[in-house]
Image (cartoon, rainbow, N blue to C red; front, side):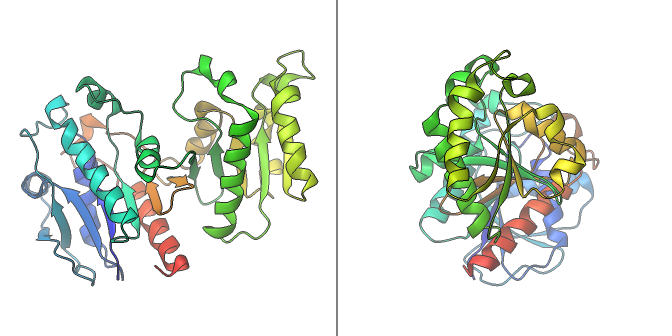
Amino acid sequence: MLPLYVTSGEPAGIGPDICLSLADRVDERPLVVLADIEMLQQRANQLGMNVELIAYQGQIQSSLKGQLFVEHVPLAKTVVLGQLDSANAAYVLEQLRRSADYALSGQSVGVATAPVQKSIINDAGIAFSGHTEFYQESAAIERVVMMLATKSLRVALATTHLPLRDVPDAITTERLQQVIDILIHDLKIKFKIAQPRILVCGLNPHAGEDGYLGREEIEVINPVLESYRAQGINMSLSLPADTLFTPENLKDADAVLAMYHDQGLPVLKSQGFGEAVNITLGLPFIRTSVDHGTALSLAGTGQAKASSLHVAVDLALSMASTFQI
């Protein structure tokens, strides 16, 4: 029974706190947290949590309630709660590197990730734009797709972590075709939706309003969408984003494709923040993540909510069961 790895993320944030809550679970498949085991023990003590941390040595059974498998990743510097330290940037990236290596080499089913702080990694002189891009590069694939999901809504992104001024130039015919191909494939294979129904946001207000508010819909987006519709794919043409996300429109949709990060995700997070999951589509392994940041001010206070991590783990385990990995 291959394990699911869980990265603990930025050590000064709530990642270690929420990972410790996994000790309350008993799953068929072993969960293994990547973290400095001494730091985790100190955090458990600060939180008043009675957790037995067990060094992972290839166990194929789940840990018992109150226990947590940990693969030790050594910190470079002692952590001060809530205070970022670039000296530990390499520690964070080592978690990601190991999780990717294990998944790609068939030693795990994949990974669920706790939050990282992009800024401190870049401050350390390491170019880093996010988990999604890191795993894409590790897998050496041309394109992946970020999708967030709640129980009632899935939103995939045509572009991810780009400045807003760069988004129109990034929305090309080639990119849209790659994103849509991945989205359709993974909705069918990973989510077992035989005939996905997809709504697509326009880039501009009112989806360009026939060219008066922008021509991207006319020149790029709709021609791509029309080519899929001609193949029998149940996909809308570009729709105004301000009215697409209404209950009437969403009731029959399996996913929404938004053109940029803050077009679709605020709507999704307003509906289910703390219960949403970030999924990287297009990878050759399972990757899910929490829907929130490092919440530095809550680290070690006992106020951090672990619900998103548990939902991310649940989804990853469900996918692994579907694939019979």
